[in-house]
Length: 423
Image (spheres, rainbow, N blue to C red):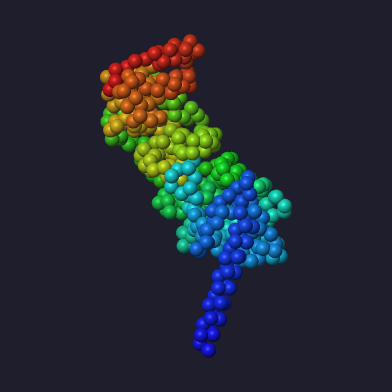
């Protein structure tokens, strides 16, 4: 009797394993990507298989399969995604708490959200739904409202791509900060005013995206930047350069041509830098204004992350309101790096050209300004080749304002042919 039960048990186990393998093979065959389909690799428990993403999306949003997903979860590289299904509205719901994603164009550190909720409905190849992002329940915020950022989205699905359009209506900028970076120390004391709306397009699987932000009446108070009115630089003697000095104008041409017209941030430059960084696959163009660069030098440090960018923006907006353009420019010139263990315009002018910053010749001023893009690399090239990047210096000369056409042509010739003694 015992032997018969044992045989029966092993037979049942064999049937279960056979059924499991058969189901796995059927699922693998059903979800396998076609020759030209967008593929990805999915792992669930001990099983791993290649999946055609468009096929999986169509399956997950179908009214006959989506109810089976209700209450289930999937472990992904972005976080654990939990599924829900609303039968009356035939809407799929995805929750990720917490959720993260790396965006090389914005820095090496991943962007992290405490809570992300996405709803999705599909009609043939068209999809639409809502996005909701919120901070952790324990996050303390002074922002009125429920601290949830909401956006509408729609998309177009093909066998190779998914193109998404996202529209987030205006919401308090303080709420954006509470959701995107609740751990920033500045949020404990900063009073942030203004609103931000956003339109975006995301193309998958390429991962490319475009942003079109709308900012109104952005103000910041409480960070104490007014103390910098009388601050002294640790880089040595101040240059005390006027706004129309050769070096000041060359630095503006090199780093921030709209310095005197923007409010501390430059949306046009920001979107251009994101596009350039996407093409490069890494951060090559910062998009920061001189004011933001000053904030990095004196307050936030240079870590390449979205959090640092958000902190930098707060200081930049407040500095524009407390210091004014002339003082910001002076502080930048007195703190900017010009090579290893060298900072400040006065120290750089005396080190490289043996003269005061206010007595620099136009070509020397352009040379110094061109170095700011990458001071360490510029010094290495100067020591090795006897000059810095000629194209970079020429570009700075071309962007210099307040000179005649003849002066510009002469300056470009001087910069192009310049040979200064290596440091």
